[in-house]
Length: 449
Image (cartoon, rainbow, N blue to C red; front, side, top):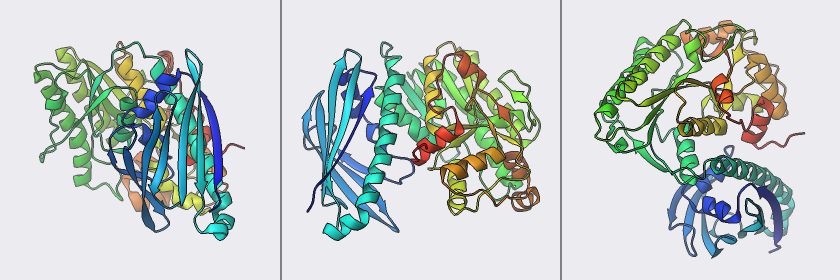
């Protein structure tokens, strides 16, 4: 068995003790798993101490493999090792080493001693691709670690919060939960009952509630029944939640409620800010009712912010996940004329924006959660194809989109919303990936050229 070694270092904007503590908190491993690779945490025993183990489910073509790693040589705050005791590789010994650079900086060096399966033949066939995958993975991990630590360091002198989250198991809720717990905050899930009503009880004594739950708008066509579910799951459920929060013995200080840029309707190339008027159409009506329901919580002195999300990009879900198969085959392209504007935001920036609003105690009202540079649909298609090194030569005619999706095509795919995050920028939020190409490179593990 021939051993290989992979080394990569990154400078972090916090002391070694703070960097080590971040890795020891719940959610750290999940924050570091690349979103393009469907690796899942199955179970764990213990925390970051010698002998503690974590079990992962790892994709391998059409099957999934078990990977069990054990923590060893844990020496706070300087190092720990993860050693695979079961997995697809005959050797995996990963040492995380933290070297102080002063009171507010350190270097993290990841050293991996590993071996390819299959001996010399396996090394010949898989060696280069495995090393490329390690480069992709650790570029993503180091970028995420540095950005998360820098964000949490801004508020290191603030008390840790208890945050109740509805929709905590969804794509955004899951990412938010891990972002908050690695910062030392407590996250309490809020669950729905059989009648779709959210149990507000666990929010008693919480500092804030983040309300993300709602019926998916993805469907082949919007029947009247589907539209009713979309409306009720947002307007009625939010109204019930606001009422129930006000009845708690110790209501939360803040309610951050999801909304969407559908509030603005289809507005061509008009630049839309939080002060822009509402638009027309089904989604605009839903968003108006949604936000009005959340604002009921203000009657009891709760700070209310309504988060108008653009298209949240991640290969784990949403629009990008649906687009990727066609674009990877070189069969992607613009939809309709391609001139309609698309307001987007990367998943990491979406949850970092939620964290920003949680921490900005004076921030209330509508907040556009979109990247500062919306793009046309044609620009989006061209950029995604370029990042994937594929052409974008297969457009979807507007007529075909309408024939397949009906009203949903006009509301989601052909609507034009040029939304900018005026409130986030005015209150000092820093985007990790403000430009679409950089965001796609990060999310898909593609190196910039």
